[in-house]
Length: 301
Ligand SMILES: Nc1ncnc2c1ncn2[C@@H]1O[C@H](COP(=O)(O)OP(=O)(O)OP(=O)(O)O)[C@@H](O)[C@H]1O
Ligand SMILES: [Mg+2]
Image (cartoon, rainbow, N blue to C red; front, side, top):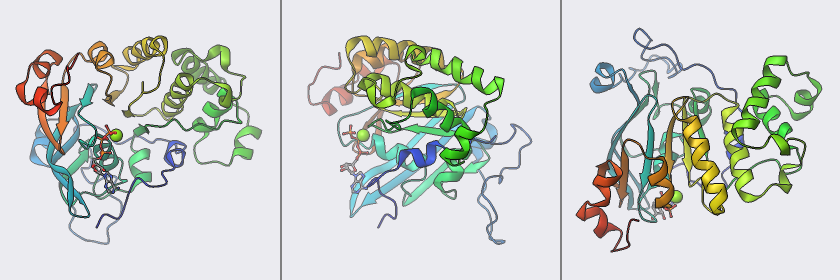
């Protein structure tokens, strides 16, 4: 039985946490971030992770079943530092569940999962994982509708302080500048004084990405970022992702193949029935017979 489920998610709970550094590179203590575990033997990061310092996210042989149904089945996926990875797959393939596992919301039954060599994702809780630098955007945007766009960002920057304390404290010049840059990046400078509730659906999605950026995440997990967007908003989101690429490692789950084609530069991973069905360039996976079959003849156009 799985202890965690996606029911009643409270995305902002983890979003408003201040992100701390996940540690150094070569000489980092591999057990940093696991916390005190009362003298129990601590798991070591897998050999591949120790040798391959460029691997940021390491998921190996992960399986999870919900009431006997295998939602994730022996899944292995590695993400390099700075990579933008697109993950596609039919409904129910397990895409969101993978994000649930990375963020500690769902505990797998078996396998190993590491974020850098420092953090064993299967031993850390959701708070520690967010603090280590993994920011997640859920399928449905969740912003504080009564607060202005600027205040939403200000609150996210402040971390786990109370709303009252945040708005009484003065922002430093640097903080104000960072919010200003982020507003530009998410194309909401002109909306900065408007309550978030007045934004379009697409603008709310960008604001939520902006909220994540306030935490300076190492890895951004974006679940269906363009769902429900107008074509113009999708275009703007393509530019936004282009801008974020290189500054952050990113995993994007999306059904919109035009969007995927526009942003995918390296590897696209296709999930099907909880496993990786194919991985490679967009051209490679588009012409992959098993992928075509998994989509039941739907053209991957
Ligand atoms: N907490 C849960 N309890 C029971 N079943 C679950 C739970 N979470 C996911 N599942 C099941 O696991 C499977 C994978 O679900 P998941 O949401 O990861 O798919 P997905 O690829 O994100 O699909 P979509 O494209 O529709 O968002 C589905 O069959 C889903 O019903
Ligand atoms: Mg999903």
